[in-house]
Length: 84
Ligand SMILES: [Zn+2]
Picture 1 (cartoon, helix red, strand yellow):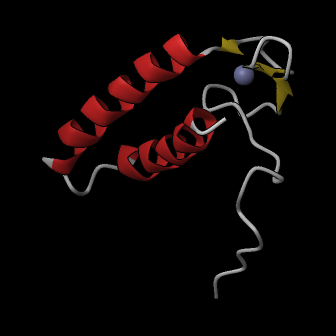
Picture 2 (tube, rainbow, N blue to C red):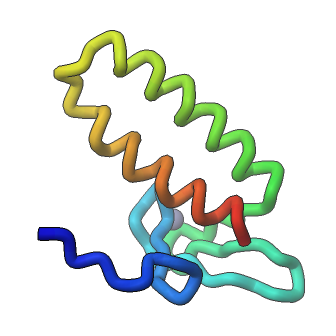
C-alpha cells in the first residue's frame, strides 16, 4: 500500500551521499547537507545526475544487482533537487 502524501517540495529531503537532512538556502539557492556538509549547487547536481544515470545503465545490464534499488532512490532525490 502506497502511503504517499504530497511528495513535493514540502517534504524533507535527504542527502543522497550520507542520508543526512538537506537544508535549502534561499540566498545561494543551494542545498546543504546538515550531516556531511556537502553543498549541492546546480553544477554538482548535474554531475551527480549523470553519474547516477551511468550507474543505472550499468546495473540494468545486471538486473539482479542489489545496487539498483539504491541508485533508483538516489535518482529520485536528485530529480527533486533539480527542481529547486
Ligand atoms: Zn550528506
